[in-house]
Length: 89
Image (cartoon, rainbow, N blue to C red; front, side, top):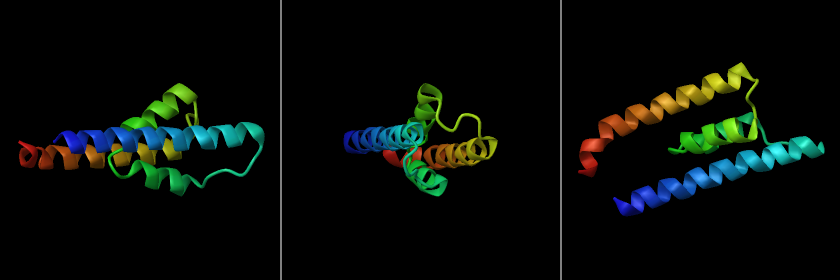
């Protein structure tokens, strides 16, 4: 259980840093990451890291379509956690 939580924390941090890197590139007028890449980074249980980046860095916070996909991924992760939780006990 400790390994799973440590892995999730690490992946959430990496997701946050990926969003931060994309934000920095946007501010500098440099090449950006594709939104698909950011969504794929959000997929493996890292919705909290993505939302933290959206709120704290104000990155992609005006794009309703991006929010919609991120919300869908968050709900999907919540459902997986809900049904998988009995396995972790």
